[in-house]
Length: 187
Ligand SMILES: Cc1cn([C@H]2C[C@H](O)[C@@H](COP(=O)(O)OP(=O)(O)OP(=O)(O)O)O2)c(=O)[nH]c1=O
Image 1 (cartoon, rainbow, N blue to C red):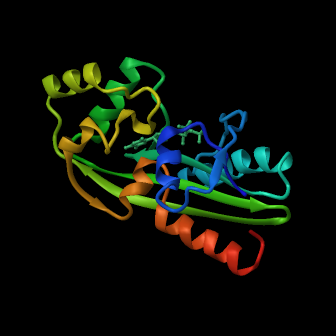
Image 2: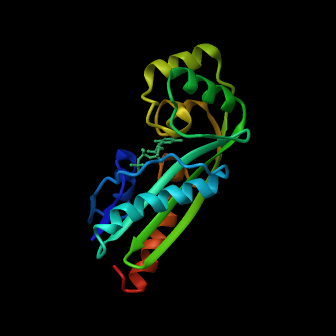
């Protein structure tokens, strides 16, 4: 059985693009980590989430993931509040940033972790547009305080890499990892 160790409805929706044969078990890990490198951070947290659920489900294939935005040398997770969200989108306005998602798949002793990065370029977001966006989108549970799959779509000038990675799961990369588990007969 495949288990998605995530409370994210986006990740659940995205995993359905690969298979309908899975269940969700939410991990209860502390996401505070003192890691300054964004790629190392998402890998660490994806592993932590997957390992937490794998401990009590040793015979299942457990998937964990974590997404952050890296913009101008800063790492943006979920905003702490409206002011933080305003600051994050302000920093990304008219600029290119990276969205990194770590994904970890564990079954018993076998563990595969990967990081997928997507470059996203925002058009300049005007003050009024920004305030309207903050009023109308549920951004508090999104890394970088935006949803590319939602109202932020209108700010996107260009993306390079996997779109689904930005939404929280690098679907094609995860598919390849799961195929490897299948070939090794560990699924
Ligand atoms: C940048 C971006 C992020 N996101 C979301 C994906 C993730 O759900 C969230 C980042 O938070 P995460 O901490 O990676 O995930 P989560 O807390 O939602 O779920 P869990 O830890 O239980 O797996 O931001 C979007 O939905 N759209 C976007 O455009």
